[in-house]
Amino acid sequence: MDEIQKNLLEQVAGLHEMPSGAFNIRANGQSVGRSTTAHIDIVTKEDKQGIDIIIKPGTKKESVHIPVVLSQSGLTEMVYNDFHVGEDCDVTIVAGCGIHNSGDKDSRHDGIHAFYIGKNSHVKYVEKHYGSGDGSGERIMNPETIVHLAENSFLEMETVQIKGVDSTKRSTSATLADGAKLVVTEKLMTHGKQYAETSFNVDLNGEGSSANVISRAVARDDSRQLFLAKINGNNKCAGHSECDAIIMDHAKISAIPEITANSLDAELIHEAAIGKIAGEQIIKLMTLGLTEAEAEAQIVNGFLK
Image 1 (cartoon, rainbow, N blue to C red):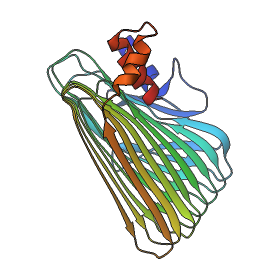
Image 2: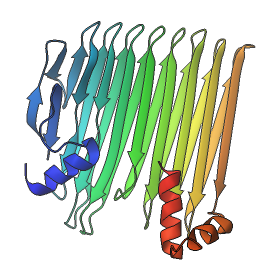
Image 3: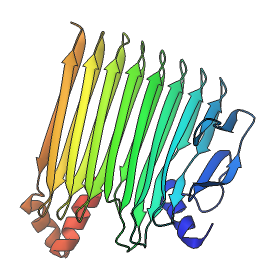
């Protein structure tokens, strides 16, 4: 890997070198490194581009890294990755995509990640998106995540995009069985003329299932954002969605939460708030010696932590 690719890898996966444990690292459409363990196997799909990650029942305190980096202008790819997590597991999965585009052609990575999480398993899934390069070609990412949670399983999902992605449509759908739990935390910042669309569709099918979907977003310059969250309560369950956004300059943000109760015992809440940075916050920080721009940056950074 060259220095540009190594920098992308650090940004999206926090890696300075090949990680320990299981991993599959992809650069410019090709695998550049793979490792498996006694409990985690990674198999190349035969019918389409992508991999199957197979985590054996009872696997604890192990991790899987599957980042993708693109540094070739004009490259377009579509991958399909399936995660088969056995029962009684406790694992961390780190994904993410970084695109560096210094050319005049668009670079694009689309991916579909499907999770099949077994009974009583706990999975933490981290996905970061990052773009760099001064070319006129766009950096485009369209990730789709499909989640199937078995009885009493738990998925923590953290998604982050704070720089350099010109266009993205991020879609997540989930079905939850009895006692299953889903927690999603999204952090998003757009600038320039970027566009970002996030959509969630959660079916709380199981008795005692729950979902908590939280998005924190900042839109600057002339960028646009759309947040869609739909939670369907189909049993005795609890669901909550929240979009909290800061709008700046000439940006536009739309938040459209939707909750549907199909059971008398479904307890569902949605919240959405969009506003500018309060003037008194900026003034307070300026009295401590910061410039107005520094005060704004401090507030935004704290908001997205």
